[in-house]
Image (tube, rainbow, N blue to C red):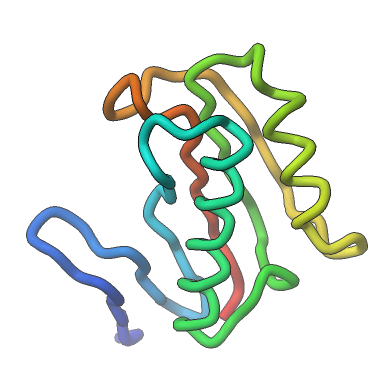
Length: 115
């Protein structure tokens, strides 16, 4: 059987799970109530932190799901994303609109990466 490693494990979920060379991150969020720009920056900083803890980085991201509380903020989120994502290493990506945990959250980012 393949080993499963968990990072930041709590009673409800783990921040990251590694299995068969693939890293699965829980949805990353940032300061509630902050702007879409600030929440995107914060969530991506958490992605960077967790990937580093797992021995990986953003050049190894395979796929990303981005959830926005309001699709009218798509361009604002993309402005941050475009500065952060390394050109030549852009992952498969989907973005959708969804109610998030509370109305104070505007952005949630879910990442799958290679270890």
